[in-house]
Image (cartoon, rainbow, N blue to C red):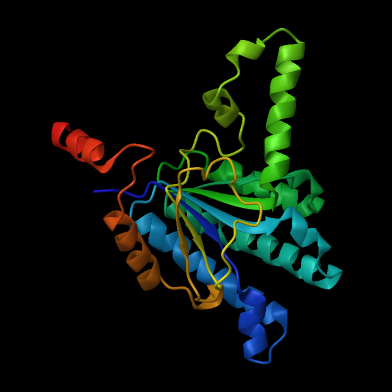
Length: 243
């Protein structure tokens, strides 16, 4: 039976959820933040090893400034309010992305929560903030090229494993499952390298309405899938018998 070790979550639909209720988009973001807290707790309770949440993309900087400012406020408030709870629930926090683009006080909050939870051994929670996978891949290539230039690496030593080790998600395993809410069916520049063999679930549920029960149903469906990684079904069946 498959076991989900790493879930990547594209939390989509806050704005549409609010608009359907004739509320401002900020109302949807508030509800979405509450949903995120519930899902983080659920994953921790279920023994999921890694959860990566797409909190703010590099493209999100193009949104109206008032909305961007509000999202920064929400992130800042979450980190300040939840730091103690993360420690209590044994959840280790970190952020990936172009964090240096964030407001200085938010960067400090990220550092403080990262340090406060670094000893935690349960769920490893990653917020992808000001994150774009193409930019991540470019930065990885630049780091590797710099090492080649300094004679720390040879071109022949560059491999898939080496590239993976230069991704920001390292040392976490690649995501087994990518979930996107709101009915959209695309990755939107999220974990492009890491999701090469991920299973995908696209649900019509808008993120503020996403629940622990739906998460469990998705994981149950994941566990029924056959992941072959290029092999044949008979090969997989034989390996399972041996193991």
